[in-house]
Each structure stands twice: as structure tokens, then as C-alpha cells.
Length: 92
Image (tube, rainbow, N blue to C red; front, side, top):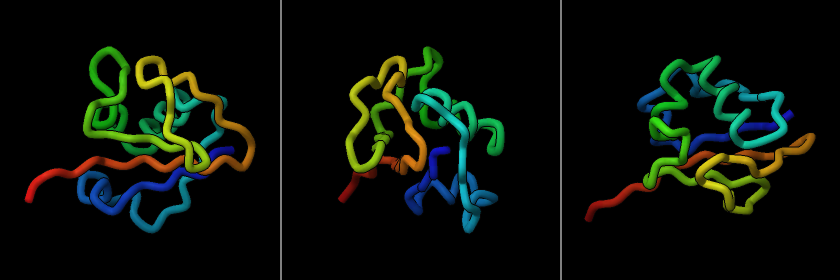
């Protein structure tokens, strides 16, 4: 089971997730995204484009390692894995 954490900015788009323990049964990052979509409709399209690839402004870390496969999201997720999903912010 993956424990999913989101950066604070994502809660402004998905306020119902704030304060919830997000635990997803998944073997890959793609399955984590699918699981998040099931509990927060629109989440998958926010973090992935229409081809299922991570959007440029999104980073995902699995146990503090940035995902390598941004296209198919095939990076493995094991038991008790921590998955951090964050939106890159820009501006000045």
C-alpha cells in the first residue's frame, strides 16, 4: 500500500483530500494516479496529460527518488512506499 502525500498547493484544487490519510493499493506510479482519480475525480487529468504522461509542472517522488518514467509511470511502488506528488510553482 502506498502512502500518498500531496504538497499544500494541490489541496487548493482538491480540498476534500486535505487532512485525509491517502493510502492506495498500487504496484506502479500509474496505479497510484488511478487510485487517486477514484477518490478525487479530475486528479489524474490534473497531474497527467491526455496521453497519460506526467505534466511538466508535476513531479512525483517514490521514497524520495524522483520517478524516472514520466511517460508510462511504470516506476515500481512497494509495500509501505511513500509517494509524494508535487506541483512545481514558478513566478517571482
